[in-house]
Amino acid sequence: MPFHPVLTRLCFAGLLLQGWSAAATPQPEEVLVVYNSRQADSLAVWQHYASRRPGVLGIDLDDPGLGPGTIDYSVFVSQLRNPIRAHLDSAGLAESVKVLVLTKGLPHRVRDRYANDIGDRAGDASTRIEGGRATYASVDSELTLL
Image 1 (tube, rainbow, N blue to C red):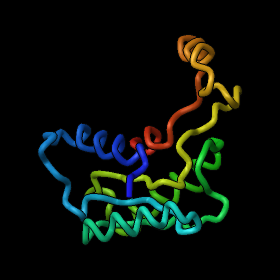
Image 2 (cartoon, helix red, strand yellow):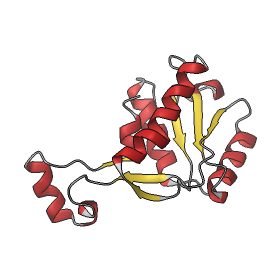
Image 3 (cartoon, rainbow, N blue to C red):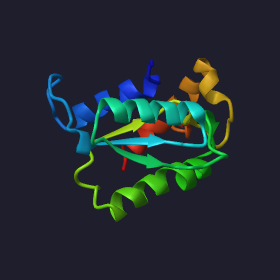
Image 4 (cartoon, helix red, strand yellow):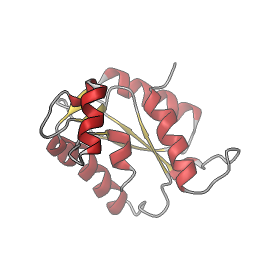
């Protein structure tokens, strides 16, 4: 089963941020797979990943309203970032988890607060970035701030 492109990007970003060599592999207990059991694709990816990497950690967002696509920043905060942060803190994983893996079926982009479809128009996006007015982002890049 192919994985969502976010998986590859986020794992690679996690390895770079930790200063690991490309040959290093995170231990299962250093990987937290974020999935939503209410989305069939997301659950299937989690189950496949867990079967291939015994001991890998997971967090089920269990949210029927959270699906793939673009979301508002407030939804990102309340339904993704805060639940993941709370899980890391409550389970004592904040220092040991090195890589977050987002599964297929989760949102991938945070909508710009002032121009809803700006991420779809490259020319307009560069103008907003250069002017310091861009507020859109990818979900995985925002989660690196955890």
